Length: 338
Ligand code: PEP
Ligand code: MN
Image: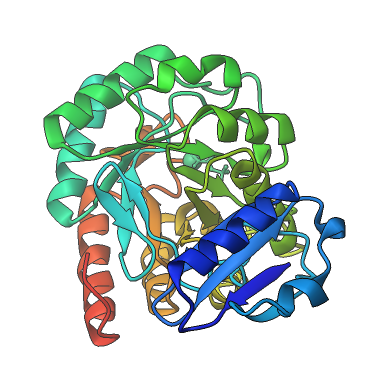
């Protein structure tokens, strides 16, 4: 249920209403927008009589929310959310570019990639330390040592770090990580979502599962938010279809669809979506044009030698060329530049 507050309502009236809701064991979510204050009610709203609430002086109208996701719903929070990633903002007009290798391979590698992507305009550094690989015989990531190397690259460049958490048992190793990635394969690991959401308010980059609908993606965001962490960034990285020409199938239409359904920022990952480095530039530029709040791009110093995802990794020079086009597109759309 959402309660729209009258424009001329006094703060004390709003406070009284919040008190009434809390007395009915409802945790109200208040969104004070430029045009309207909205109170979202989640939990057991059965005790709330919409007619009684609507009759209150301070209330303009009451709406039932049909969708199963509440906290993530745009109706609950009409203004877009800006997530602060250790000073780098994303969403609500702020565009962020996360770049770096699929996996951290050595300290020299991650520092050199971090320096070059920063020079090209990246605002955050990515790099996997714990890797969810299809084969148990493939490189599994450097684990704790990989996280230490990411910290060294962060110290060197000042770029906030984004890296994947696969197992909640490792969470204490993530103290110096700025954004925790939950990967596609764990999007519906509900225990992990609940544990992370209740442990930290650090931003969570939640990637769409390869067979997940948008509603399922939003329900996974809802798990994190309902556990106490409102700082969720959604990531579209393509889904599995019958098409085999690319690694996954990317429908960029989901960006404006999600914009309508949710207030959360939406990032596009053209690297995993396409699987080929030559496609990352055109698809990444298109994602910026369609209104994504950011990009996450795999960049490797020597892609043929990469331990993971070399075929889709851009060289630093390719990334630099793409960033120039991304900036031009953002300028053409009069959106703030990276
Ligand atoms: C990754 O970001 O390297 C990754 C494994 O992504 P996804 O979960 O989208 O496959
Ligand atoms: Mn990868």
